[in-house]
Length: 261
Image 1 (tube, rainbow, N blue to C red):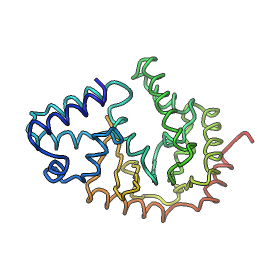
Image 2 (image 1 turned 60 degrees about the horizontal axis):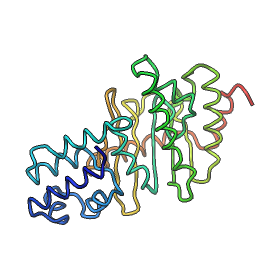
Image 3 (image 1 turned 60 degrees about the vertical axis):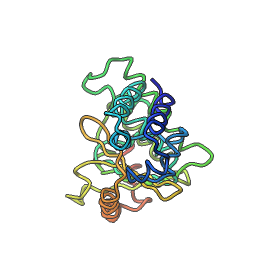
Image 4 (image 1 turned 120 degrees about the vertical axis):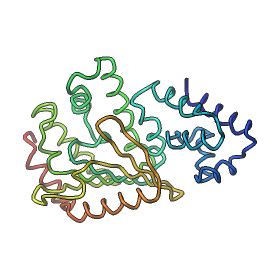
């Protein structure tokens, strides 16, 4: 099943219930523009949206089940829902306490992360690496989002994939940080405890002012956009940015850790 079929199912459910886009927006307390974007394929639906629509349209959980099936077609289940926000964002703010963000990973680094523990078969590893590399195209497109990346210092010290892979990854960070729309900051270990130790996150801001957050746990990722969570993560971002080194000092640290010129 693809997302075009899912969109048709949503429209059919609305029609059967006699509910317009605006009416559905009122029932589930989402913006009409967002629903329009989903129904035209410009935005991927989240599971939260599918569940809310099921309840409003009394479909018995059909839309949620169909979305799960569509998400299984390619990549991890969170990917399709998040990619719509990521691709349409005018600004992305990401914090990572353990790993280099996916948008900045080299292919070798990504492969080491995805294949760790041998939990994925080789074919799936290849597919997931390919999906991750495709995501990075948005940094090189004509209208890229403004991106700010905050990394805990441990990220640039952990030898993911071995020393050579890490060294190449540090070079990639230095390269990407030269892009005019990319800023990179390191939160030094000397800070001690900080509000990001619990986990990483990404905040996406869209041209219409809408914001969404990607949160990841040990099992899967989640896209959330309720105002209370957005405010909390925004406050965490401000706190972390206040603890971080300047861009120039952050890049100097990476250069000192890099082995090869």
